[in-house]
Image 1 (cartoon, rainbow, N blue to C red):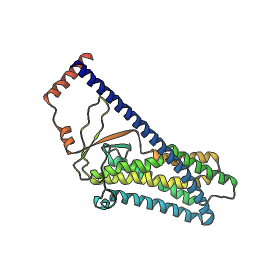
Image 2: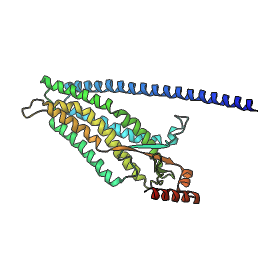
Image 3: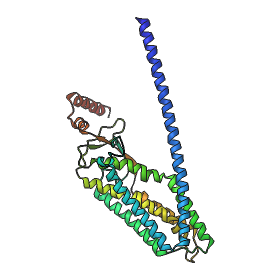
Image 4: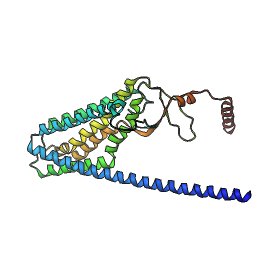
Length: 321
């Protein structure tokens, strides 16, 4: 019997070690795939932004300045409309019946990286912040329109334009703008929008050792819709508009003598990018998506044993204090 038990134990140990090695190998492969994906995304961002910068400069030479601005604004507005409509279609199961075999499956957790995604905070307060950011983006575009076409007869103006393209690339790649404004937004809102009128609830995920928070129900579908529109307007459409316009704006960064001013360029870059930092959270908030059964368990009154245990813990803390 002892030999049998020992042999069985050894075999189970070997199987567990083999499974552990397989999991470690799988994790390494996934890490490599993620790294390759990040490098591919960075390469696409670099090539794409340089191409768009070159295209805009070419269009300025061929067309008038106002036409180029109108084209850029139109592209951004169409992109915004497309994304809003896409989310609505993505959640429409009838639309997808002929396109994909696997139905849409909401995520189990949501990570809020800006105030619009933080459902535990006040919508009214953050709506004013969002409207303020939209106003700043609008004023930015108005100022660009009023400044008119930079004087490309000066070589320094060309230098400032290409400096704007390089700074735009640095910001987009360094901050992972495309991942944040496309992938992360898709992942978050594809699930969040399914909560409209559903019995599911959100709960702020407790850190290790902390007491679990109470589930909260999103009573208003309008609450989610407003947050979605503000987040998309600011962090998708607004970012795209400013990034497209940045090289042209920097090319017109002039001092009092009408010559391009390097210090003015620095201030303009910092001010433009700071607009999109205003709604960022210092620490991301993670929400758990609870279904009906999980809500019932979370809201169930504590058992007598749990109450007694909590009382003992409190008495122990008081004695130690």
